[in-house]
Length: 608
Image 1 (cartoon, helix red, strand yellow):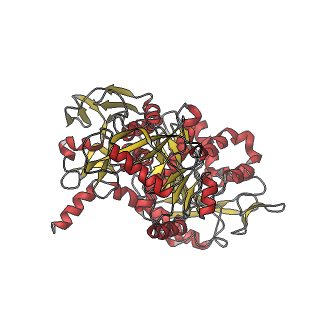
Image 2 (tube, rainbow, N blue to C red):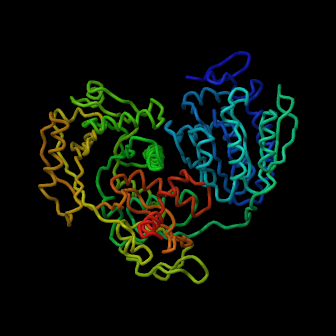
Image 3 (cartoon, rainbow, N blue to C red):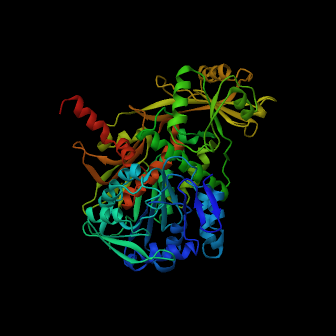
């Protein structure tokens, strides 16, 4: 632990041998250096949205102060997007301890922040604090992560924080200043506590005009700056007001949920007579990230999606009666390939030890509550939830059109799109493999893959199971006297009739990995997942044949067997794109998700 107290200097970090904030009054320092230094709240007046970026989240004090000031001074129609980087995130208890002195001023907001605080995994984390305030918290080295940040309307104010340049030189680099310039909106401002010469020069060399002003407390001076270039934001620009979503499964209802959080009116068109009619209608689904050996654009997406699912499901379970169990998941090391892959994952993903453990067979058995013969990766925040339940909660508040087939989808004369002749500002196609039914997506390389789950009755032994077990198949902890065992991957089989052969496939895998469980199927369900040729979701604008995005038309499909996590992350990304807000995912992941990747690959194969 790197958080400590020193009676002379206040709260400090032992790693950097430096304080987090002024020992005189950290909140007063924040207001003087970062809020007053960036001329807030004056600068966000008459702005539809305002983006702040911060280079060191620390205890979250700067964010909480900015959030409080925004709610006190901004109009109801305005939005604050706050982006912050932190390489060594503190724990919830450490933050609460550090900010205990400002309970009266910040207590309500602090508790909201801590209730949604991310698990400490490297990457992007989107927190929706209210319909007007979002926090994109990025746990990573700022110099590595800034190039991956997308802010469509530009950053308006920089809180250039972090430990002093002499203590933390690896942060204050030329790359930092050049990326700030790339991301800044016209007339963006900067405030920082330091007056180090190379900081002023770094700002000046990349397009900022910097100067000194009185500092706070023991600091005689501090630096403020203003960007001389950049693009002006349209302060009167209206965000889309009406969105149509085609499809009422996880992908579609997740979009409805995220957009509704931002105050957008949503209409769901579902051709069946109920929501979650396909694979989203399973009674129980497990949520996990997709596990890969190395950190990559793909793994960054799944990690962000998993962390988003963890905090969203926790929040939903506090407010709604949903079938949700955060029981953890054991991923068995049942082959030499998995031994190599999981060891590499454990070493390279950069997760805090609280959130991932590599267990011996004995430790895995103790965690499971039953005997296991394999080592395992353990993810304590993983678990299970009813997709039916969350689709219902996600869609609450939307205008739901059940039994309504979308017959026509056309661009409107004055912009926007016509769905069965009805006008919308934007449309999201989230109808699984049925996305191909629309002419503009008929080329998508997606296909249905049959999956069958088996329901088995609890036994005296299996009732002891404390965590889900994954092994190329899975068994869930018991719920209402039953376990879910699954799921087959049968791309060669058509039809959703429950098959005994598929039950046997599920049970054979279970017996091979947990031989003490002797079970038979008492029921089950078969449905079709949608998968792409490269087994990665398709999320983003719909491109035309020349790879140009069709304005106002988006797609979310091919979520495969990780739909609980990927559909929610996809929904946040699409809401960001529609509202032109900072992206909740790194740019490399966004590019990889885009449907145009298939067009580019086809052109390369054709030699064009």
